[in-house]
Length: 133
Image 1 (tube, rainbow, N blue to C red):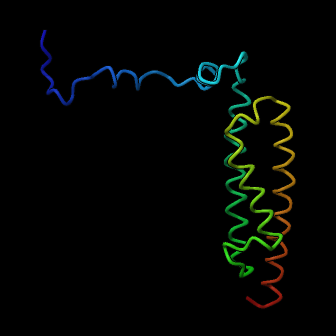
Image 2: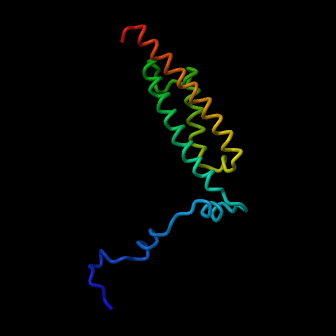
């Protein structure tokens, strides 16, 4: 039986493939040749921590702007901290953090980095109050 829909609107194999649910652990196992699957909880934690580190990186950029540092400055300690955050951020979704133990270490690193950024923000706010801004 011929379809009454125009050719553009007919479902093709490509359209049906979009209905398949993406299973990250299976994809990883199939494409990386691993013997074990990554637990869903680890994948979920990686995504959450990736967002958290991205937020911290944005906060550090704002603090650098308020401090009057050049965005390309590589000498200031704040730039070194920003570089470490960026390296961690880019490594989160890769192969480095695939076990619950790796995630626990990453969470500790996030907590320390967040505390440092909050301390910098508090100091920055106090400095603005002293200046009368």
